[in-house]
Image 1 (spheres, rainbow, N blue to C red):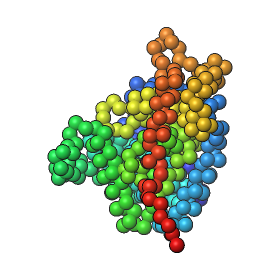
Image 2 (tube, helix red, strand yellow; image 1 turned 60 degrees about the vertical axis):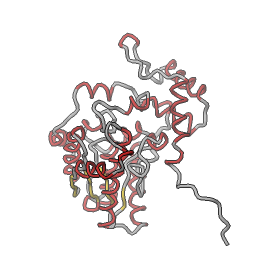
Image 3 (tube, rainbow, N blue to C red; image 1 turned 120 degrees about the horizontal axis):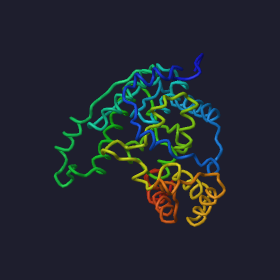
Image 4 (tube, helix red, strand yellow; image 1 turned 45 degrees about the horizontal axis):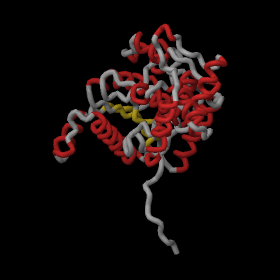
Length: 324
């Protein structure tokens, strides 16, 4: 991207004010109270990753003969970083943002996403999906009722969002640029054919904690970095609640257990060893915060999620056939 240090305006304070819905002090504390376990993850230089991903996006779009990308923007960290990298790779005129709230919980995040899209200078539209979702629920067979079924309804909304994204991509000769990171992909913490569907995943090689470092490199507004990760379907829902630990714990577990192939006992031993050595700060037991406590049950659960969700990372299986 020519003549710009960052896709975002350098006046971060102005970007913060334009967003209008900064996180509360409680959310700031929840998002930033845990140190990054740098000794347990690969040492990634954010500047190198920035250049690598920009080249990847430009190459993939060029190879497809596409005119740009479509990014579903939620106002959260991953979609903001993805959109910013796309702008740096392609230029703002080739990036289109879709903001797709579906309930009252998503409204503040939608306002943030609109402000971020404005700050990036990209064309964007906000489409409220509640009427579409209500009609979808009305015509679906009664046996598949979506009321009071948060997982089922959340998956349905994610698939409606991706349907809109591919409509935009088809209409404008663009690729759908997914926003999932490596943590989410390895855990299957996404909806199959929903946010798990895309033509490329620029952040797919980076753990969530790596994405935070990249966000700082990109001058992403601080309020975005400090937002606690959430799917945004239920009041008060946090990724850490669903996964059993914050990403500061989840990421080294995945790296050691998946990338390095260690068994659960060895993963626990390595993480606790880092705490003892002072490479990973342990919580003060007096403050009642045990989020960084790691035991075999947690590790086994996370690695079990990885194995059970392999189908989300693979193409649909087909029977073997003789090909002449």
